[in-house]
Amino acid sequence: MITVKTQNLTRKFASLIAVNNLNLEIEEGEIFGLVGPDGAGKTTTMRLLAGILEPTSGEGWVYGKHISKESEALKDNIAYMSQRFGLYEDLTVMENLNFYADIYNVSLKERTQRIERLMSFSGLSPFTNRLARYLSGGMKQKLGLACALIHTPKVLFLDEPTNGVDPVSRRDFWQILYQLLKEKVTIIFSTSYLDEAERCKRVGLIHKGQLLKCDVPANIKRERNVDTLEAAFISIINESH
Amino acid sequence: MNLNRIRAIIKKEFIQIIRDYRSLALALINPVILLCMFGFALSLDVNNVPLAIWNQDKSQISTDFIMNFENSRYFNVVGYLDSYDKLQNYIDRKKAVMAMIIPKDFSKFIQSNQSAPVQLLVDGSDANTATIAMGYVNAVVAGYNVKLIEDSTSKLGIQNLSPIDLRPRVWFNEDFKSRNYIIPGIIAMIIMMIAAQLSSLTIAREWERGTMEQLISTPIRRGEIILGKFIPYFIIGFFDVLIAISMGQFVFHVPFRGNLVLLLIVSSIFLTGGLAQGIYFSIVAKNQRLATQMAVLTTFLPTFILSGFVFPIYNMPKVIQIITYVVPARYFITILRGIYLKGVGLNILWIQILFLLLFALFMITLAGRKFKKKIT
Ligand SMILES: Nc1ncnc2c1ncn2[C@@H]1O[C@H](COP(=O)(O)OP(=O)(O)O)[C@@H](O)[C@H]1O
Ligand SMILES: [Mg+2]
Image 1 (cartoon, rainbow over the protein chains, first blue to last red):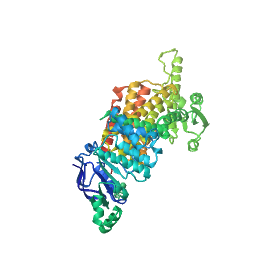
Image 2 (image 1 turned 180 degrees about the vertical axis):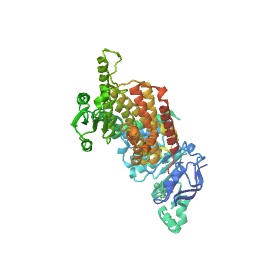
Image 3 (image 1 turned 90 degrees about the vertical axis):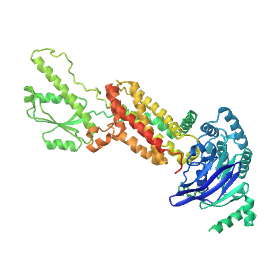
């Protein structure tokens, strides 16, 4: 089943085309990596798919819901973690979790179980009463993920979730993502780290708003006859100029 | 509308207010400071108004008349002069706020039982003092008139012809305490302070800090966000109104003649309009500083300047007077003074109340329409 599909999805900011005629199809339970340098249009794509940014033209569906005409219904099925830390720094870890549990109408019974589970596999348990402001970068990102997972979303959008996160937290983070894949959650994340892109089932290379390549990492490397995705992407980007 | 979500926003908003000492001070301490400042320090009562007199009559009768001013604590006779130039000089140099000219024929008029013209020159540069001082003059003159009537009736051998107590009486604010006028005005100021400086931050802060981007990606409804953000500030504002009313009653002893329930209802309506206005600018600006500036400019300042709280509307230029018709505080202060000092009710105040109600509905609609769960 296709969970994310776009047709000529375009977003302009004045004369700048941030996302240009994007055509994507992402399967259910897939982990898809959106890769590209700063300013490539990754965040804009994520926002469009999360229903919080109006497209200039083109269409898109997430879990069967149209990203602009049904953007509110769409939000029941997804979780979105913005690139910038989006939780309340003056609330504690627990207060943030409870806030998002309330917003998603998670029942009290389910909530206690879920919070317990999320806390244990994110390693946040010792910090429940700490203000989010005083968490380390990695802890903040794990809290962001925990809040995003409090309502068991079908599709998860993560905008550069591991940016500035220490290697240990990064490994924890990936552990959580692999666990989610077993539960058939579709994960779309963006990154500028190419070693991370290697872990994805498929990657899309985005540059200046254009999707230059979208395939399984192994195929991309074989096609370019190189060992790493990094080398493949450099060659693709150079060719596009 | 989902109550759980609204409650979650309310709770979160309260936690944030309590943990930020600045907003806590704005919410709870500033109103009390404002009350004390206006109630004690900035009392608009005027005592010892410097008065210059040119007595052209120089008779026993006019001297008697002047004694009434000499003996009043409201006036301080600073000079007896003998020309217009000198009077003008006194006023120009701020040695006197008022000058009184008693004409040559003053005693003749009085003796022939006619009313005697007395000219009063007032320095209008401080409209407030001038207005209040003119009120004092009226009171002193009225007192003198009564004495004259009593004298003339007793001369005719008619004792206590009029059993009616003819002592002069200033209506609605008998003892001329400006404090009585000020407390109702301060209630309006406090409400607008909450609106301008607290509610204007609430949405802008979330855009600025990036928390709104996260929040709008959830299924929460727009109305739930707006209502969840409105209610905490409404509770704070209402609490402040209660503080102001209690302090007015127990600290400043302002007479209260009207209906408390009506006062609270009208205050709630005014508060709703003000908060909606603050929230509207919070939505439009998406930036805390700009939002506050716009809100102060459109809520707090007009309430201070154009409502008739400090500067009487009838002293304003015509154009400004017309502008005051769209300042909600103008109606609110009229209502408050009506309830406080005159004890009037709905039958008289309903037009003003209706205006406030329409304004509140208009602002709520405007804010509700403007807020979008989208990034621009
Ligand atoms: N709200 C916005 N207004 C104007 N320009 C924007 C806005 N958001 C993004 N852009 C521009 O669109 C381009 C793509 O940005 P973005 O999607 O954030 O890239 P990335 O996330 O890949 O770094 C950039 O040139 C950026 O400056
Ligand atoms: Mg980005």
